[in-house]
Length: 415
Ligand SMILES: Cc1cc2nc3c(=O)[nH]c(=O)nc-3n(C[C@H](O)[C@H](O)[C@H](O)COP(=O)(O)OP(=O)(O)OC[C@H]3O[C@@H](n4cnc5c(N)ncnc54)[C@H](O)[C@@H]3O)c2cc1C
Image (cartoon, rainbow, N blue to C red; front, side, top):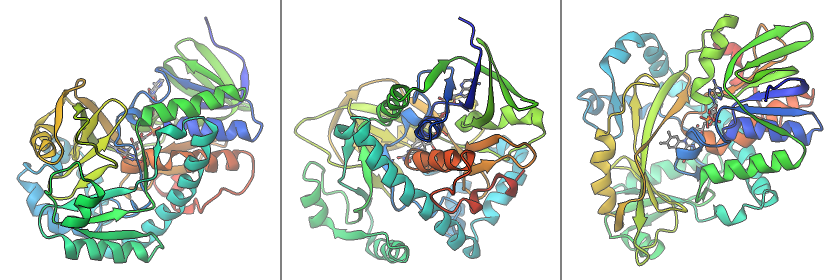
């Protein structure tokens, strides 16, 4: 069937960001088409660790990155691997990324991310109920845990978070065992992020929000998006299955966003912090109640609908470069040493966290094109921050004030 017709808004990409933008625009009474070549929530928004993180206000490029760099140079660390050829070709991006890790760049970005995250957590908690997916939500926090003596690090992190009103609890070995009796006592110290939640299927939650969008009269179109072109009164999305015209177009293509904008003269400095996961059959006698971030092992363990999901650290390389399983292979035995689990429940999954040099997403109108809205670059926290991003875009389209300060996320800072 060939697509055609018009809408107030066309949203490109049905990950958590696009689904949220479509839903929020529909909630404002606009006619909306949501387009993706796959089912909603089947890409990056499927494979993440499912953490709705209240405390992820300090991105990877923070001052402590400089002290960690010598450990990463040998390219053997589970937290971060990098492709030398990619690094040489993208030296400019790396320099800009590191320039944002200086102390003076911490606070403004933390304040910006805090506003985005707080709003988003409120929306997730509301939408997940309305979408009839409450059973997927766990209000059990998430635990950052140290095998080494991390008490000082835990206290320092707690104090930093407290400056922004984010609550956490420092735990010792006994307290960790009381909290998670199913794990072995591998950790000496921990920090429980008490206002953080998690879900047992981020893809399932994204799909539930997409169903809510469709149930409210929104239209989901499954098609490859080829290009967008300005028209006299808006935009035309050119699809493999036809074309749709709209006054507003929202680009929410996650790690695929930059190439669509190139023909319009925008060179988006988007890089990819790739990551992997694998799920394993759980041992029912060794239950896990919340995600655990192993600070020394550089992985996250999350109990999911299917099994225990182990997610790896960061791999800096081209988005579509061949997979390298080294990081996951390093951390899976460590994870198995924390909580007993069975054989793999599926193949290894790979995704790409889309990241701009300051680790803040773009949320706003393209500088030289009215009606072209950009909503991508959510790095490690896009599942958390999708709803507020969508709500802000929908508000701006409707001419209303966005629900948090969007100025730091302005696309104009790079375009
Ligand atoms: C290992 C890992 C762990 C993570 N853990 C967490 C976590 O615990 N908490 C958290 O908040 N975040 C986490 N993240 C980050 C989070 O997953 C991402 O930031 C977020 O999913 C990005 O969502 P998105 O909607 O921007 O992109 P996506 O979910 O990738 O959606 C983009 C969509 O665009 C579609 N698309 C692209 N090109 C085209 C085209 N040409 N035509 C048609 N459709 C197209 C794709 O099919 C896709 O559905 C993690 C990421 C990784 C990789």
